[in-house]
Image 1 (cartoon, one colour):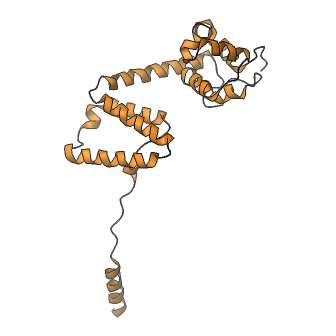
Image 2: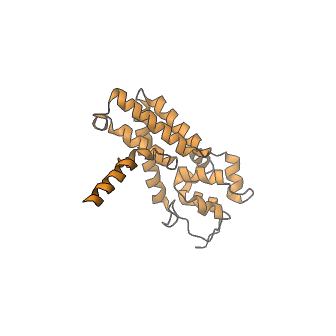
Image 3: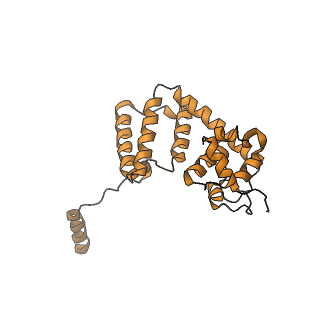
Length: 204
């Protein structure tokens, strides 16, 4: 692919067209300053990882493609292989809209603040390299709540909460309490009993 555009950002904006790629709409879409967008599109300033991540979140374009800066390379979606088109953008925005509606359902729930706080704590713990410890403590807390208040009927009564929390946890890159799925340790025969059993077998 050959492009007359100077940067991958300029190519992306041309794909989005005047509706979303213009100097008026694009900065609002990706939550970046108009002056930075203009300079980065012309090549006056380099693309940064932070900016590429914001653009990925808003458009679904591969942040690696943006960072590489190769204007001869085919624009690709987040997966790094699917060609990126205006249809890619529309699908991405439709999925985001659905996600926002689910988040709105959680925000209307009286427990929303607690759920949001837990997710922010997990995210912070992940950045600090303490994800496993935080996840384990969250699991212990959830087990204590289950023992006190019970668990029956939750999945049937509020499935959207479980679904949305699962998607939000995945979005912050997999900080999830994995301890629930671990097999419980099997009861082992005490060493003393093992010796007695061995002796009995030999006598026979």
